[in-house]
Length: 323
Image 1 (cartoon, rainbow, N blue to C red):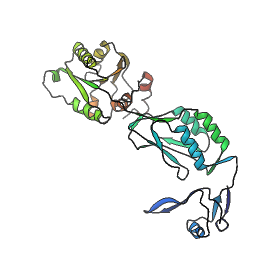
Image 2 (cartoon, rainbow, N blue to C red):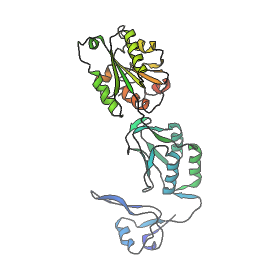
Image 3 (cartoon, rainbow, N blue to C red):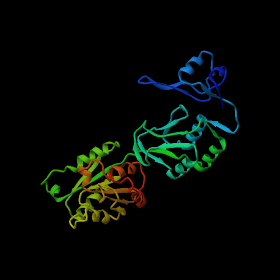
């Protein structure tokens, strides 16, 4: 591209958008890339403060910002993501379904290490609604070296860096523990909280059992729900290290493989996740009942996409885990 005086630009092809801002009215491109400048455009360009403008000058070593943005889109747009049209050199990716947003953070960081590249996303592995913007991308200058974009392609590799994993349908079983509830001395106030959180993901409590505080009965109730076809088991209460809190022992006694008991998240440090075959079993501490946001809100969306969490997934929650 080359810079010339506006008065000398008649017949030239504009190589970048020129934005008009009228407070409270508009902020949009008045002239767009590719526009052939006419004599009538000159006064308008001057009103926009453009004494000089950049017009296209073919150079085989350079790419326009719009073309570079399309390359970034191709490297990042994976499953269940839609893309906006390129506008002023920028493209956004949006969730096509409700689900959990995934980004290959290591590769994206390496891409952003390349000078003049800008790709910004939401936090990794968080729930998103359909239509939510999850990423925006552009290059910083109006034109960029083709060689630089080739380096970006090599870093990104063949697989797209981002995707949204939709929620699946789970049959949910709930075990409510506590002798005070089992014997009818107090009402169960935990179940309504669980039901409300499940509803966000299109789920419900499909089977509910009440257990006293014994390890044996809680284990029995978990196995009954599994026999009934539950795909996910939630156990409420009895999760502390107090000697009369026996829910963790009950979960272990089912034969389930414990991923973690205790996580670096507050509220919710006494959370447990185990798997009996492919069925996740969660032990939910009491804070889930009275705190608006806990470890359960971090874990549940990922579980209901079918992701199988590991101990490492939980250790990574410490940064940002103070909720």
